[in-house]
Image (cartoon, rainbow, N blue to C red; front, side, top):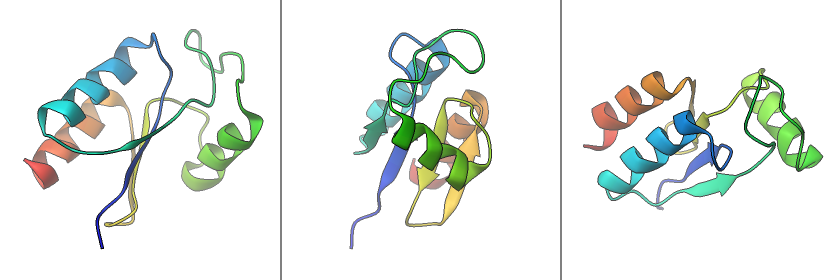
Length: 90
């Protein structure tokens, strides 16, 4: 069964872009969720169900947020996510 990486992010968010670039550089497939617009913490919600799912899974309303369903791991903060991806998928 293939692993599934899910990225909760916002288009235009530089931290989300850094994570997307790392996923691409590593040749990883992933699913994107766009719960809210980029900007200040707690930007405008685009999709309430997705935003609520993100908070239910991770406990915070912050992006970027990575869910690795295969390893049952979650990560916030772009630097932490990039380190995690490079450690487990490089």
